[in-house]
Length: 318
Image (cartoon, rainbow, N blue to C red; front, side, top):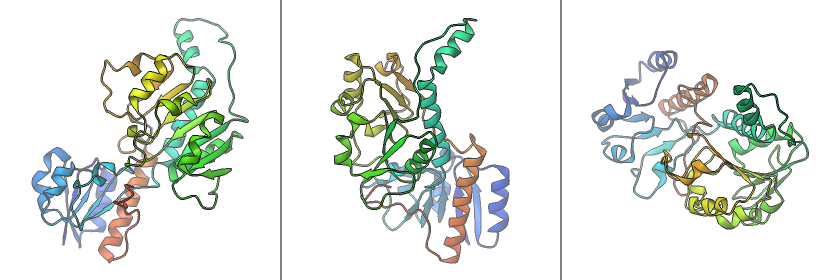
């Protein structure tokens, strides 16, 4: 009998499914992460994301199934115990994050925020020239599930899509081109839309700095839905202070929550959201269902002694 600790929000239907299906092989505890130090010490399996120091205190842990895709909190050296499996829910967030990206671009291109403000003031006024997606060129850093979902939706608007990935091989569906990171930097100047959905690793740390932002077209839009560490905040602020025209949509920041006196709040070219582009649990039922289906499927495999899906490569960091 395995002791399974679930530390993340688990709706009644999924909780019932877990308890009923695995009643002969698992003993479940459902506890908020802050209330679970003792339970962690006796857990064989954890579904959720307790702090690394709590994970390291576990005495009999065999496997951690995350309910997130990004695993960088655990892949840092010394942050995760040797011999323990780590899996994520890669594949659950592609649709919801890609919808955020499309929405952000359309809001920017079609001046929705201006018209919303005008409506609040009962003001009927044409705000002038707008942009359309048709014929644009998007450079997408990260060509995995999230990047591919973004490319798929952009293709519906007749956008040329260029994917950036570590291992350049065959061109995946929905991408017109694929290139490596070094080659991609020289392509920033030609892109209308630059999107980062990169994981947080040593290789991606501060991949985008002042020089990369300076290469942007004046009417480009840069969107970060990956990890905040990919952007050098100081370099971004320097670029913005020079009065350039590119716009930025930032759902992730180097430091979260973003402090109230950050200069990023004050720049009209920057739109900030509080890391919500890929929210699933408690936010989007469809995404939440995908998360728990992956978790439940992997638990079945673990009980049956079969290989798990979505194992995190601790060397690569994702």
